[in-house]
Image 1 (tube, one colour):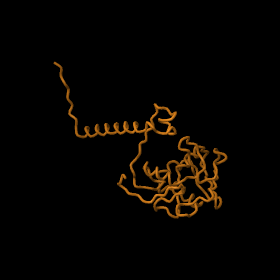
Image 2 (tube, one colour):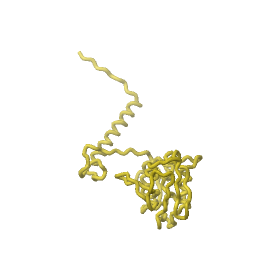
Image 3 (spheres, helix red, strand yellow):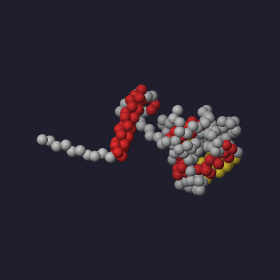
Image 4 (spheres, rainbow, N blue to C red):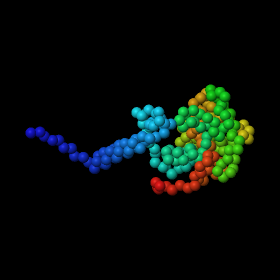
Length: 216
């Protein structure tokens, strides 16, 4: 006669296994819902590779709307619709393009890059984007005492950012670093005159309020 082996499962193990099964069910439902996604996602639909699935994992909202501090995927998603950097990257190709700057540097291998601000760029309150805003942002990024999260992407190679004139700034590198073009998209330029208040950016969307703890 056969014998059966039983294993006592603790409450902690039961909760853990339940969580794993719940996550698997969520992923399955998400993949099913994505079957009619746009071709540009590179996952399914159109002429895309139907065997490729793109999964996104996000951190919870840490209640910060500071572009230099948040690690929240939810906050970052909103920030990307509100603020701009000197240089941004195409969401599909990841190729850099000038955003608040008028052009990309002529020599990516140089140790100094000059950027001229886009004429007519304004914050949501109507104030113009100025060189002081750029200096303020990078001073915060490089602040050794504040140590903002995004500073980890800049401190090793960026020496300083200085004013050239009323419309231009110069980035000084510690060594040639062509990959800085893509890194710059992380440093969203912030309005010096309203820092600390609800997001005031340069893109079309405006942040009106935040409701922590509410999902809808």
